[in-house]
Length: 133
Image (cartoon, rainbow, N blue to C red; front, side):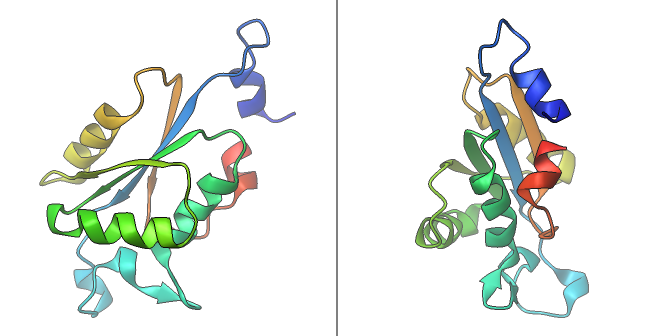
């Protein structure tokens, strides 16, 4: 059993509720691409979807909240739903800084949440095993 499993079962064996906040509000200016970096595809999948899939496949994560630019809320929601991300509960507008966006995402998680993982959606090499570790 990994460290996270030990933590989430610590309270008398009761499984805790864990949330993931994916930060997807970047603009990709360093990528030399017209699209925001979270929408750039690698082998046919947007990097945001690849990141969300790791949390979707993790039994330790119960909800996913995505933070994006206000203009991208509808598009992010559609892309994630179209790719089978069923743990998605909210897509919210980010702030003017990464820190502000993380806070807005944190504020949007389920109030019953015990632990929150905050992840940059453009860092798409994450696996469910990484989440467990």
